[in-house]
Image (cartoon, rainbow, N blue to C red; front, top):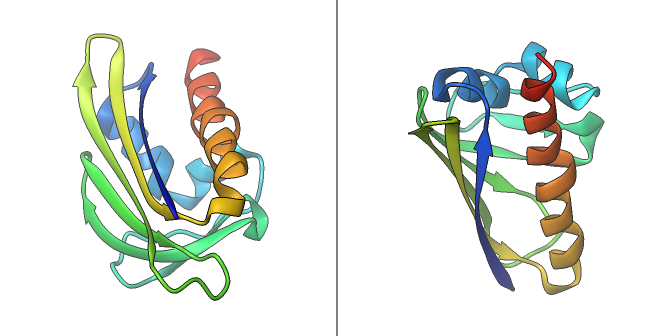
Length: 127
């Protein structure tokens, strides 16, 4: 199991980024795929038409979200925490992804950079 931590600069306010990460309609806009999301702790979520699934654990509006991502029969929970901080260029998003299965690490970290935060940054750069 491996952990991953990285910061991303997004050209939008923390409130806008929070909505982009938690509102199913906004998620659909920047991912281009079906998304199921709720800010209700304990609710299940699905992103990229089911490519990423898990459970929502905790929310702090405009500031943070914590999720458990499912990886089959993994013994330890894979926890994703995204904290949003105001930044002179918009938002600094602090990502921590704990307990990534070794065999999935390269794909997951590339996905964070290109598909997840890469797409979100492009979405706001094009506005």
